[in-house]
Image (cartoon, rainbow, N blue to C red; front, side, top):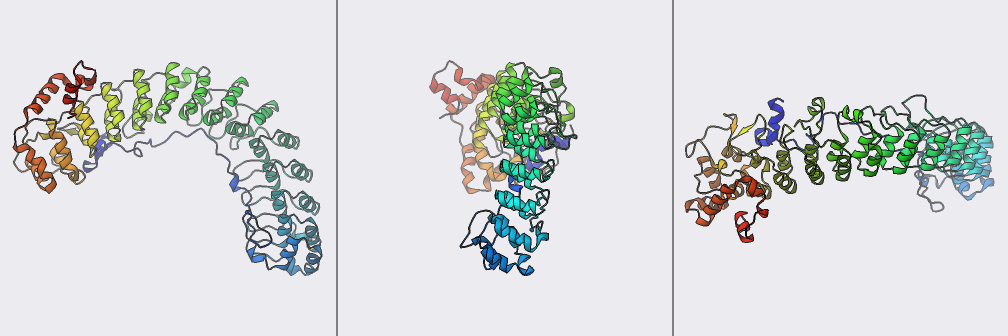
Length: 580
């Protein structure tokens, strides 16, 4: 790795901070095995009528047309008045701001006799569209006015004209699960395989509604059950995605291919695994669904189930997933479970033989700024303390990643994760590759997090090196002239100088008598409230404090980390732990 990558691993003031959650993301994230959830809200608009006579929460405004005598007559069902007024084509074709003519109002309001009158007056208006490209037929279907639909179809309305969202009357009828409407539209030649803007046909909509009766009607009318190309989504995949067992079984019975894939390589089993549909996944496997078909990004159904935390589906898939396929994957299911804090899934995978120390291939590790490789690092980088503990209990190594997991945990600021790693023997002297400091890198990564810094110091982090400076009381050279970063240089940067007093004060609790260099002295003199920190050094250290430091030095870092288990009186343990 080059220096520029790792120079992000310490602090903004030196252009060397550990990557944030955003910068730690790979340059090319694995694609989720997913098909888009269909958004029914994008269908034919719903209309809102604002009037003292007729009001509904449905989308267009008739407020401006309330004074239109034809519209008023239509809403009253006054056929004679409509007939008299429509003697003039002016009234028949008069549009409102939404592009509606009286024909649309009649279809929407379910006034079939008024509709017939308007069609007799101007039969050529039958397919007139609104600004949203709805026809009177689509409006009548949307409001389930069967008599109006019959009237319009008999007058020659085209059943295949779609709205702006490309939804046809047949699609809408399936969405409403209106079987009579579906049969009527098909009897007048509605195209059964026409697609909406999301690529769905009427069959997809019927499947998503779990309506096998409508599915049967559509298939008899020629609905395609297995798309001829991968740029469309098979209805079976929709059934698996939405957990619709009845239509899934029906489609399989009618010959649907259980292993059909989308353009992204997603199968029905991927979708069932993603959405937690255990019974669907189990059924697909009994119908010979292939658990070893990868998506275009190389993910198997087991990867997807692990990523989304469905431990029961993971247990189901483990036994039917090829170990060879997993070995050749660019990422393991365990990595995905760790990344998304799926600790129960991680436990299942480890119990069934997953390698806790499996690493990413170099070709994918380099997509991350910190070159992470292990599941443990993934867990820590994403704040998954529970999963990290599961991995450590299974024997996860702390030394396989280029950057120590402890450095990442400290940068994340999670005291519980840091404590966990220290208990398991993480190296307090871990350094950042290509970034040399004269003091522990962990101290710099704490920044202004004093509780975290105290946790590190309690566990044996070297505080004395923070006060070691080759220049002493002499003037210091300008910052940046050396590749080696000293504590006094780091703490004096604009980013950290405002926290200098409290940080130095805490560090002094873990050292004996020290001499501050001129830069630290100048820093403490810059604020009046920090003068008390400087005055601490004017008097000798208490013997009690020096004894504590000596005992801690003799105990060593390993024993300090497990001090609560040492057979000592509680009072002495508190004393040695700086709990005064």
